[in-house]
Amino acid sequence: MAELAASPGERASVLARHGLDEARWEAVDAHFQEQLSEAMGAADDDSDDVHPLIVAYTQAYEAAQLRLSNPISIETFAEVTRLLNATGDLRASLARAGVTLADYVAASGRFMRQMPEDPALFQRFEDAVKR
Image (cartoon, rainbow, N blue to C red; front, side, top):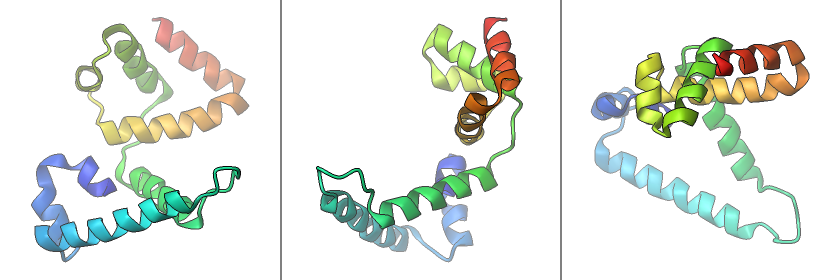
């Protein structure tokens, strides 16, 4: 799924690289979507526990996104953020900065984890957003 999201114009070749055609992908995807839905439904509303399948899926998807993305700098991440805040148009903001959605999402995850622990990095982000 991460590779399909990162390569929207290459669906057939992405599927083929993984030994899938459209029909097989649809069957596999439907199966796992059902499993994920059941896992989400099985969660106890009074508990903060997350079903192990949801945890595993989330970790695997994030890892795949990181493998597929090109690391961008904090300044480029801030530029996209600034443009997005100004225009509300994600697609145009990404295009103007020359960044893919996969790269921005990966950077967001990385920097949002790092900035609370690294005041200097947070300051670089703030300074770049203000430019």
